[in-house]
Length: 111
Image 1 (spheres, rainbow, N blue to C red):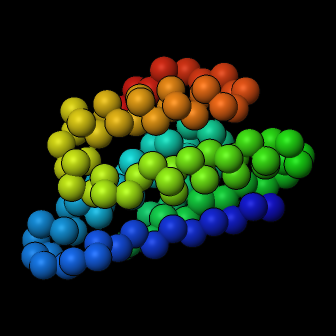
Image 2 (image 1 turned 45 degrees about the vertical axis):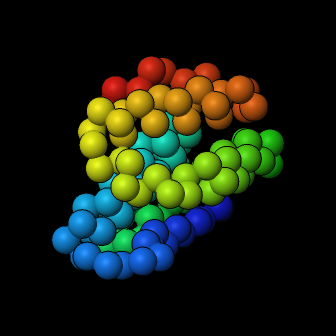
């Protein structure tokens, strides 16, 4: 079983009324992407829990590559993702990027 948890924090929590929706958007971004790759995902406050179980090593290896890509490419996205159209665009673009380095077939993203 592979279990991950991602704590989403904003470094400069200046205005919680602005920051909270942005953090939720980023959490949903992770949820959309990870569910496309068969993760079970749960969001609780500022935590995203994702897990996989019952898969072989090469399957998990591809999922770890996906997690690495997400960690490297999602910094500073919290404010950008507050707009639904931009969120959908970033999800599609991220899925395209991931498809370029893992051999996993995907259906088109439908928000």
